[in-house]
Image 1 (cartoon, rainbow, N blue to C red):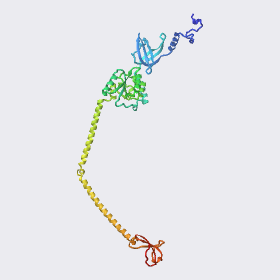
Image 2 (cartoon, helix red, strand yellow):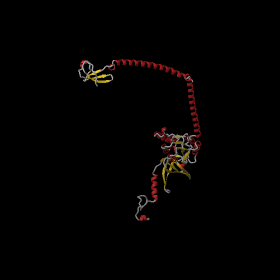
Image 3 (tube, rainbow, N blue to C red):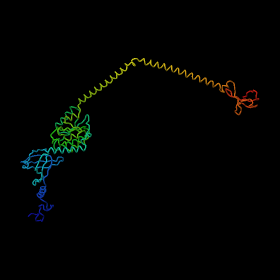
Image 4 (spheres, helix red, strand yellow):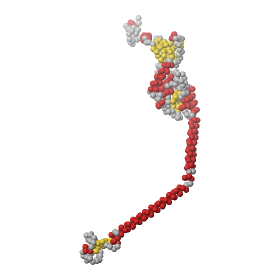
Length: 421
């Protein structure tokens, strides 16, 4: 009998809760876990095979989630494997009917596979079409969102596989067209489960670099499944949020990934991307020469036309003999001189008559009478003396003459009297 029995402790068989004094053995806990897991039913799951290996007829594989970094272990018994009609390998997208299985001896959890099939192309296309409609409804495909590429980028950000043909095509063709162009390389996985996250991280990194003028995502084509990372929702939204002009150069015509729709420019191949992003220095110099030739021709034609027009104007009769201008003005001047003399004579005659009229009016004026020797006598009260009888002896009179006034005193009425100062 054990010490726990002799001490009266409860048996550690899982029938009672475990305590520090009476813990469960590992086998009890493992048995309870297995019992609970065994009660779980089968379920269909979808993912990507990231590992596929056979040992003694059995297959041990790993199934990764298509969007998140979550992986499950798969175990396929040889009897189940024998019923498969398709061949599978790492990288395939599949759906599997699995049941959780807990291995007591190793303490590991794996999924026992009962059925396995490739994810149908129709299902993938339907899923992509659904994502395409969603992004289109959000306006991420609108042409108004696309940014115009710079005419001559000083620095190009290139996201591609390391030592890939796509990298060599873009760099070589760009430098052939414009030798001074610079590149900021960002290597990333361009296929497999890490591709979408790597490319999205590269876009964010290069977009944050102020020296990068344009970003190119390049890959040298591939089959439909290899291009699926470039239709990943997270990658597409990262590309849509990119401020720097983005060029998609995946290099596949038949099955265009959705990144082609989001990018500001879609290039058919990496070589095409280099040609469309970087101008050809020889072509640009030729265009400059052509433009200069056109400008010279236009200016020459304009000047020549003006010279011919002036020559035609000068050949007209009106300008061939300039004397007619002087003659015409001379005749006109003669007419105006004659008219002026006539008007002046008329004006002089009119004013002479006016002077005569004024002279006649002046002869009748009192001043003209005074100038002939007459005087006007005023009494002391200011009245004019009109008769000799109106004056009495001793009256003071004021005589108004033509050139002034004098005073006098009446000595006797009706008789002449001398004037006294």
